[in-house]
Image (cartoon, rainbow, N blue to C red; front, top):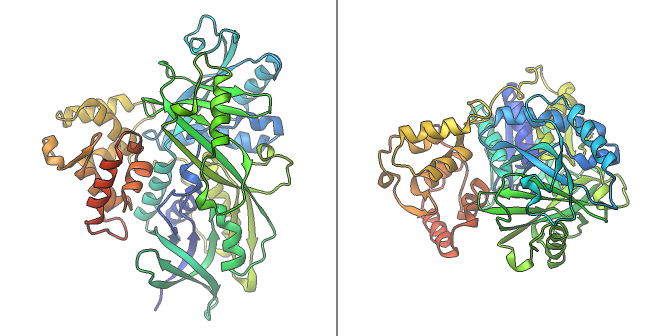
Length: 506
């Protein structure tokens, strides 16, 4: 007899994997498919922030901001290896938002979300504080506040891994071709393996459509349901340049067009600058940062920084399409970032589609999705994900340095920067990766920049990685450091290995 899953999820981004994790932990049988690698769409092209969204206060998005502010410390607690607090400096710009408005906004930001561990906002004298040194001397006063940074693609993978450990079936590189009503009154989801083109049929009582930029297409063209909600695709691009300053704080720069951009220390030796907001039409898989956007980001940063940022400084750029709920806002920057569910029940078969959302609120989105589906599910467990750490996160937030030192004591042959990178990526699971290795030689081939054969085999066996791109851009950001030749050699080596279709048991 064919298995009938409680829930089948289309989409392996942060929302799909977050729902899979939550549902599996409540005892439901879960199937998830993703047409490409996990986090290969919008979820890996973010500003790498877990934040409340200070600028959304101007658009009266108080519910969204409050939920996001609360989630900052919740997510930091369950994933302290990939999430870290960061202080942001907001210089006052004469002629833009007045200082009193910035103080008021930051007061609300500090108190709206029940901040507990993150430091409060404060006023800075930029002529005396080190944060003023990279700025033009015209900027005399600034405000400093707290948010967090995140390794966005690893957040997705860790949610998928935890879902698998709790019994879910997760199938990357498997496209949902069609969803139809089966003879036994359940959804029949037809999927196709990207490599073999072999088709399979999955049966499920409930379908969750977390297709991101493709959510409307999946609902209408593959499930045959006319969407009531509509999607607004908004392009956001970022650039990465060599590190612009020595201190470890980020900046929030406001501009005359109403937008703000972030300038963020990134991967130790680089600075991340973004983002843009522009409506996008076309294939979401083909989005790229345009020269116009790169020029805009360089000019926006240069308006504040004493040393100009030039397009020739850019070492990497990336762009993603945000699948926002279309609230008919006049400008892309003012379109809501809140999430909206559409629940359709054609012929008694529930399909829940997810429109919009932010990485910061993915966990609450998953809880609310299961609340929406509760009438169609057998009785399950209560919400649980806020107190359960993600894989490798079983150490106290703020104890990263202690974990690195312990790893160096247990594996004294590791250079410190290598140990730090492993802990930032895998947390306590770095030991599972290293196993009983007693020397660097026992980690086998060195692909460059501390990436070893042992680590790549671990990623292939446990984290669904199949290509060099999966490894150097989504499981890590070593693509910033490896040469094209090194990446090509890695891809060739991986292609020669047997690729598992799902993670092996630890």
